[in-house]
Image (cartoon, rainbow, N blue to C red; front, side, top):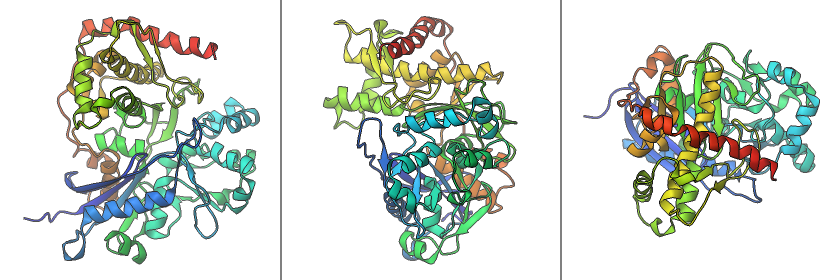
Length: 498
């Protein structure tokens, strides 16, 4: 029998693809489709994408997911999710001025330094709850002003990726608190644009869109977008959320006491809080959750899954045509002892945020010898990613937040060996979450709340399915003490040598 329950579309614009997934009001997948995206790297440390490509990919993915003609599924509401920070520069006609600078773009060090010189640490904590980092949106706006003044003169509006898709779908210019939190222009504590920061940077508030709620309807599908996507004109679109906030909802991390570690292109560790808690050293981020009256502390490593993908692509080329290449590498690594015979991998291939805040940090294998094989390198890469995520867990615990267990999602939840590796490195039970769509599911659940199919986000999150916990092995966790300490010593030593 056809599904007669309400259906919600979660649309997620990531770095490597745009995903369109349909869910019913119980969070069960009805259909899904994705379209790949390419990232342009004009110079080392730079990263760009054309927002027009996001829209083209989104339209194709939506059409594949909903179908066409008489068989097209009617969607009750749409939720949007997307990569944080990346800048969409629009002129007065709504046309893209130049390719977007992505969250992992590191060209804005000079602008971050200029922000830090103008705004002291206490004011940063008070005004925007975060330090100036190269990936954030504000430094990108300043970079455009400093380096492409003709383009800046045309600038009328700055949007985030998911909100650019909202504009294409509905014509509405709007955002919501969870994504706005990552711009360095948002008062995270009071959930409004920071007049103080805008004034300090000599920027007009008119550059920024209105802010609505994550479950609030902020537009409806236009006739033009309906033709492009197969959606029905008039379908409501809720505010949605940043990919990390939606990903947290998609695994049930909606209230204090939950911790989730995610491996995508980047890696994150996120912990919801009942108040805006700011790390005194600002090594981790403090953002608004897409849940009312809730915030979260989050540590970010810029290359987690991307580091393993690089390793697989460059150091295991003979496996390129094998669909199970990652599984083969994991099985090789599982045979290698803890610590990879003294080999350590620093996963800083595109700079790093937590805990180092260093866009110029670079990756390294340290301790190589003739005794090491590719299997040792694979083991070191996986351990290095886990060590980087443990850095964030240590910061969260140091803030007094409880970490009873760690929910895991993304690439780190797929293989039994990697699940056990995480439990052993963290010293905590890890709980894989079976839903693979992550941010798209979270966005769809926000749409279900906005459409009235669920009373609130907490109720919607009750639909999430958890798999059995993987417990740490005490002897293995103790055995990781020295490799983890070695990992921690290497970054300062290599930075001093630069």
